[in-house]
Length: 415
Image (cartoon, rainbow, N blue to C red; front, side):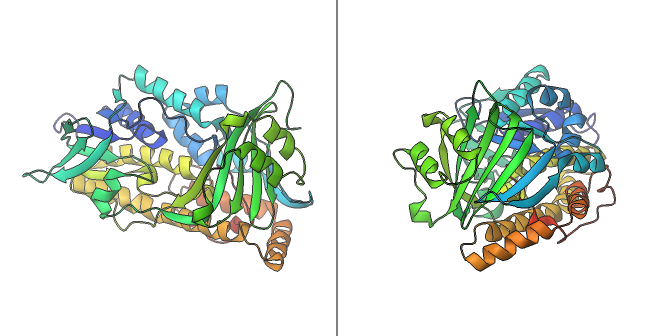
């Protein structure tokens, strides 16, 4: 789109990973976005994220990779075990990185947020906190007007909804509904830190039980974020008075370093999340409003791709804006053609994997574990490289090939 002849005022609802990365990508292309975040300050929700090579490609494009390298870990392997400590195979992350041509990073979510906000400030991108959008409506000219809780409103040329999966005003405007779907399990999340090493090496460790799992991700040997999970009905998905003790008791008989990691987590720093996702949408836009990130496609943590796909949205949207010769309708159509099939596939794979991961039937769990042990580690890397690289100019994905099946369902990702 010709920025000299078409001045675009851009408003972004949401100052999380999706909103800030989109703002940075658009600013890099010469646009002047403004970000509106509902929270009173920077988001601190979540424990950590794994930024797989497809995300690292975007980080490099946005000029963020050096900062992420400074704060993040570089895992070399992912190891799977059952609840008794028996090996169930794993993933050679080093091989995946070499295959895709970019590194994998592990990072605390709050540190990633700090990097994004720092770059936004240096780029001159206004980020306004405490701006809770309550409704979007069309004015007499068919342009969307976003109304905020404090009585103010905005009427930009392009309104981007990056306001998350649970209470997205933008998704409700575009789709008519934004009801999240509970997927039958809860996550307890936390960050463990100690003056000594909590894990032996830089790895992602993943333990599978019957209806339960525990995953821990090293950023440094003495700094580890983790997620414990259990299948349970929604009416039981509520925090208890002592979640630290609850999680410690639940996984007391599981292999180390689980107990050590839980003990190294501050008692008041564990959060319980009833895990929801959203049904894929047929369209991500209405009028001059476009959805990105979790507002558009909210996969389960078992996809391992939530933050990665938010970053991909940013890169693709900037390219679509610059490549369009017409108006926003052309931009939205091009963006949807690139993004909908990949994100829908990843969301379904995350659901399929969760169904197997949280199975309670002993025979189902035994078959799942045997399949994991029998998976071909080289083939697993090839499948992930092709699937995650789809649509990006990087090894394994430049041709846009959609890879299904293969080793995906035998691999577990923790985000």
